[in-house]
Amino acid sequence: MPAPRPARRRTERVTAPATLVRLSGRDLPAPAKINLALHVTGRRTDGYHQLSSLVVFAQAGDSLSVSAAEADHFEVAGPFASALAACASADNIVLKALAAARVVAARAGHDLGPLAIRLEKHLPVASGIGGGSADAAALLRLVADALPELRPALRTIGLTLGADVPMCLDGVPSLVQGVGEQSMSLTRFPAVACLLVNPGVSVSTPAVFRALQRRSNPPMPPVPGDGFETLDGLIDYLAHTRNDLEEPAAVLAPSIATVADALQAVGARFQRMSGSGATVFGLFDSQDDAEAAAATIAASHPDWWVAATRLKPSQET
View 1 (cartoon, rainbow, N blue to C red):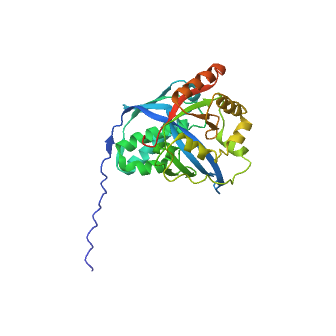
View 2 (cartoon, helix red, strand yellow):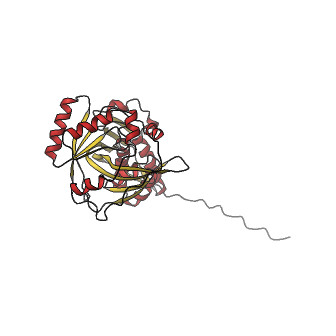
View 3 (cartoon, rainbow, N blue to C red):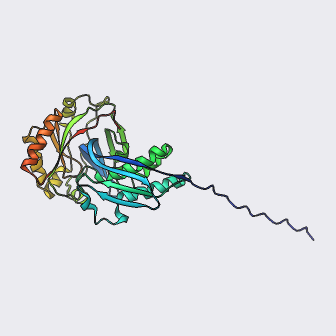
């Protein structure tokens, strides 16, 4: 008889316990995202649109505060908190960002402990300035600052939350292409006085794209290799660009054109709708000019949202 084979020893895979990461940060900025130009250059087979956009960020924005807690807790306050009151937890983009960050962290052997999150909502909802995306990006940035090696993965998973999230995570003046995931930062961009005005209406981004008549438009002209040094140079460039979503958005919300006319009347050097609307930006020579224009428009239209701010220069992150 053949000799019996020795019994195989069962080996159990030992998984190292995840490293607990306690996150904490107060007044995490979630700056407004401004599309100075936005060209729709095509449509992919999956339905997403190809874009070419010049994106910058303002000092105005929402903010988050985060602290370690015994259990996850989320609350929202601020002037536009009521707009999110009916939003279910499953639809809250900040909580989606937290869940996505936990997936990325777990893959790297980290455990993001329970968090108490407070969102101060200062930006109007569905207004074309990336409020929700900026809020999600602020949470992802907190994780990326704590675990820098995870930043590329966090940026990638951010795209599943929204096309604007990766660029908001970068948070610098950039030329953005694709559906929003391709970004090239500008070497130079000046601090520019800016006035943001929203007529108090929400515009549905899908509705704007459905109303878009032409989906294959010429891309933006090449951005100067060294970026922009002055407001005059920026305005000269913007004169050769467009926002292809402004016309269909103005059909859905005619008050967008009224806002643009109001900004021109108070001396804006350049004005245009941002994103899919309905917020319109105006560029000014000085902060004093922007604040004076804000006071004039607010007095004439007390139901509009009006915010004098500054576009962040390229050296600020």
